[in-house]
Image 1 (tube, one colour):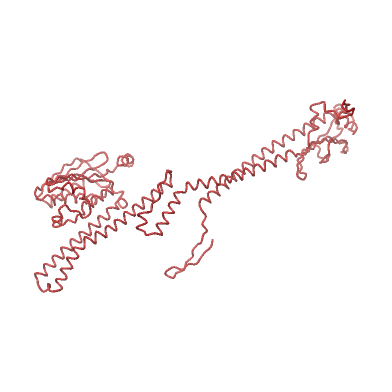
Image 2 (cartoon, rainbow, N blue to C red):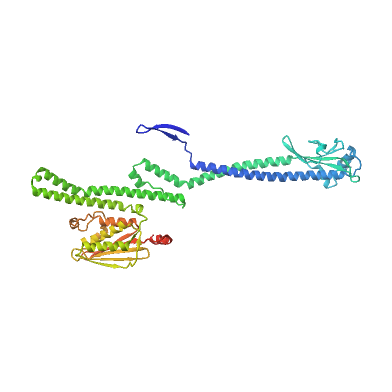
Length: 516
């Protein structure tokens, strides 16, 4: 690993590791190829040893048969073996043939005796002194009397030789009359072993290369999501952050596995980041737009006071009161805008919070009865026991306060407010109904927009900024709830809020299915 000294912007020096990049696909392919070669090598060694043992056992059987045949022929003699007798017993019979009147060796008449003529096999006979008196072929390994009862495989140059011998005993006297030895030059055995080795090497290399190429293709397919992620991250790191987050996404993948799930999570993260950036931009735009008027009002009064109004007590009092009123409205506006901005992040900060909707609703209902004694409030509560919903208590209270406050603001003639609490299998439902001015049909879809007011003049006089319903809707969306409205102009409005019930882990899967 190479190390390079780098200097930062602040003048401090540090060490940077310069590592050579090696693709994960190459590592995977080489690893798979080597793994296959190792496994195949182990298998080939075991198979090679088995084949070698079978071939060697077969060659030994040929040698034992030849030695047994020769010994049986020689055991008929009573005295010590001599060259003349052994040659008569073990040599070809000479018989005249009709063809051209010549004498040619006749084939062996005994089927068992044919084993003596097997290729690469030599039969040699020795007298009691250990001297060679007969050999069917050139003997590559000479008899040693001290080891006459031991079998051995001997390496002779490029070939192996199997040697086996025994003492020849007379059938009549049971005395040792000589020694017989069989030497089998294992050329066929060595050739077969060489072919096996060559086959295993060629097949092993071929299998290793094939597996490596297959692994390369498979890894390219499996790691495609990683490459897409890398490309997306590269674009995010090199481009304009806001624009890149809005445009860069990992393509949707067909295979359903952990990597494709990771790609989806990455896209979801970018969606959330884009949402936060849009909220930030919207917040800045809204602040600059909504604060322009109060700032201009305050500046105008300050200019007036600075020029000549400070000497006039009446103008001074009026300007100070107007400025304080605008500052109070600015404070309320900024707080509501902060609430609206934070409402989009409740799923991250308060995703596991729960509250009792029955308790919260009763508390808010009692508070409004106290602070608005001139109104008639009616409560239809179908929740007879504690009912937990998946929402932070302060947010639930905030939503209900927004709905109740709007109902009071727009019910100045018929001062009646009806509240209903109920629940279904998956949701708790809160309904707030008033009999006020109502909302025109063409305005119903717009009431949840930022800073939207049905009656702008009257709403501003009553202190409204047009953010309440936007905050309520954003909070409910964060908790997977919803809000709907039914209204008729001049007859009042009905707002219905549905919030997911909190259930224990055993029933969560069924609830999520119903929510979807």
